Length: 631
Ligand code: PRX
Image (cartoon, rainbow, N blue to C red):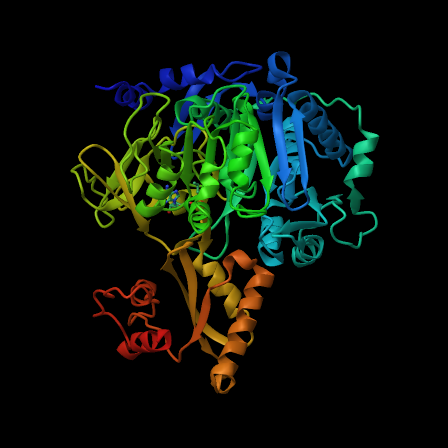
């Protein structure tokens, strides 16, 4: 048996001793007394009795050996800023932010919502929360007021940290009006709003509620705030993600398990070493940003690049110029970004010295073969490593763990089950395990979920159990809601979601959320949103709607007008990331006789595939209409 196969086997069969060993890679104030408590499945408690702190592991513990080494490299091609913070400087900034939060009365267990663009202060804010045991909830800057309001409502933060504006492609995107509107929509009101003023956009301050970060920082320039040791199981953060229902779920992460999982992933999966530079192009609003812009690289003693801007501005070579300049050894991006770069001048790939780069990791959506081949050839054979995971898991489920044992990749496959993950493919009807090769099943994980995975859904244990553990008949297994097959060599191939979640440019979106938003337009009676394959973005959302007053649809211009209005509603409520690429109008939607929307059939028609078995369909003409409006 190869060394990876052994490593994986030990992680499952000799779980406690395996993870006890991994736990040595992080600092504990009190050592764990029990490695895994799975006495109350599916709730797993990792490193019980241990106390630790994420910020200590990401920052303070490096001060002795690498205090003057780069920790955070902030680059904005939007505001032309570039600044490197050493571990010492990062430590000072985080303490200033922590002191400000303490002034607002934030204590261990309080929630702090972070609604910030990709600026250095976002990392100070996250680490400051971890430092004092506050639970952060970062909301992606591309989300608009309604999305933000539902998260404020659910997380009930004592403090919100935000900024006047972000910037995208040179265009200022004001945050404050969206935040003000979100707070007014939410029944929960934060005690304070801390505003990072970038001087990009004028904004109104609410007296007694809104405070200026620069002023508060000045006051605490030399304040020291020690790390608060918290139980391993203390929640470090919540991060909202979409599922089948309209209401996003707050994925709740622990502290000790997350620290250990990330610490072990840096050498074993990413082949990163202390002192090297990690460049993850995601956003702090997504799980990849949490794990591999902020916590993972810093826990691993690496420098991390936080980049605000587009991959093609000032030109398509910007990322590679950063790889050269900062000698990036590990890069992490998404297939969509690579497809965007593919449209640029290929000479930009050979213009820079990329010899420091050990591998490029891609995740978030399926990696198509042409894109993988293009970038692999462009980078002169640098390994391109696909990895598959979810907001819920916090770190990869499937990949090639080249840090444990070098193994070949296969096109179209993210690789094998990562250590710690007891992955099972099961039949969705019977729950029976499909142990043979090349059988399509639901990708599930046998509990306990490994360290770093979600503990529960914030404030809703029942939802955690019912959503993730009760969907496979006759079995108690965690469902990823992805279809997959495994070949004879143990490589998995992901075949799409089993639920109504779509993946637009690596952004996970719930079609129900988009439908609810569209339905709030006064002239929309009913709507179906489906994900349709797209060359660039992987998938795009398409909406098919029934107007309440069909007379508003008179001619093409009228239909376009209503389509524009609907898109605006989605932009304003959820954010432009959720905007459907088209809103087309029909007079009926295909449904089963029992009234269930036939989204799969609509999707098939959009993708020019056979819609399959339609014997349960109520009105066959409805599907014909979909075909007709598509033209
Ligand atoms: O459907 C899978 C797809 O993205 C989903 C998770 O999205 P999110 O929670 O945003 O987490 C992204 C973390 C990388 C999965 O259920 N997905 C993610 N990675 C891949 C993927 N599909 C195919 N290949 C991947 N590498």
